[in-house]
Length: 379
Ligand SMILES: C[S@@+](CC[C@H](N)C(=O)[O-])C[C@H]1O[C@@H](n2cnc3c(N)ncnc32)[C@H](O)[C@@H]1O
Image (cartoon, rainbow, N blue to C red):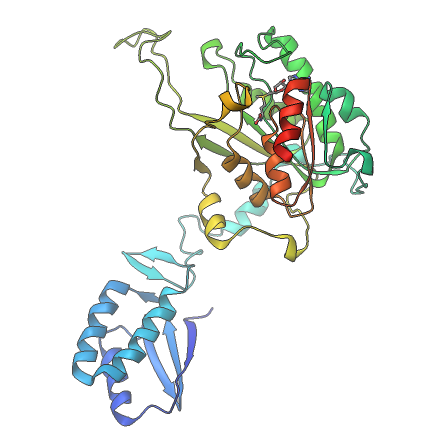
């Protein structure tokens, strides 16, 4: 097992006797098993296990005061190099750079993981690991029709990622479709469309569904949809809480006020469920990755605070995605040039962002008006 994380700094010249004394003083402030610096000619090596960087800063000032600015410059380089390491654990308020993953509460984690097994519900699926090309005539199109009809025309395994939000059945005023079906009929229809989405997904492709349950009907749509996907042997990759910070809800609506008789819970967020077909890993060319390090770090934390779309009036659609939400999904879960489909494309936010981010797209909606809006946004 390695004792230290080693960082090497090449100095401009050999360190003189005064410099060596300064390093000796620096080392004297630390437990040598946690941190020490060695020098060989002009090559300085930092041996790092555990450090409190605030304490390091104070010690640096003391050593600099004793040995002068030239030494201070070297100490700043050391501090910068340590700061540049972004992977570490925390132990007693200090940064731990070695074996921080193994210092978890669960001992023998890997062995235990092996014993438990993963996603048992998706094992023995019958999905073919053979992907097909999407016929050119469907590429980069907005298609006005029932998505079940359109999807039936596509070959198996030809789409990289589905991102969509189905009508929630809240009773919204869509241009040409009802949004107040009997729940049983609603789910039957939705599941037929999801069947097609799953069929057209590539092996390793992703099905990502944004859902807001209708809490007042006590219908957990996100669970029902997830259970259906699990029954179809997709792998549940995870769930994002889309925090809309929507505090417009009234406190007493539907439930009891200040009484346990029937309090009604309020939600300021929606759910985004993420599934994979066949395997979790999605292959792609390195040069087609477009997410930055900062975006990645922020977005893998699965609670996304993204304001709701403000231009719904302008586009005359009652339930649009904000572009920022689509951007996160596409950059985090797909590569440039991938084929993205939204079977409930509405005013075309998915397709607009897909185009902006150099993905191929298909958008389907039953409303000609929404399809027109989607086409105009692509321009
Ligand atoms: C929640 S909205 C999606 C809005 C979209 N995410 C956006 O940013 O504009 C659901 C859409 O599904 C459409 N729709 C309903 N049933 C459909 C079906 N069977 N096939 C295709 N589209 C359908 C509705 O017209 C509506 O625009």
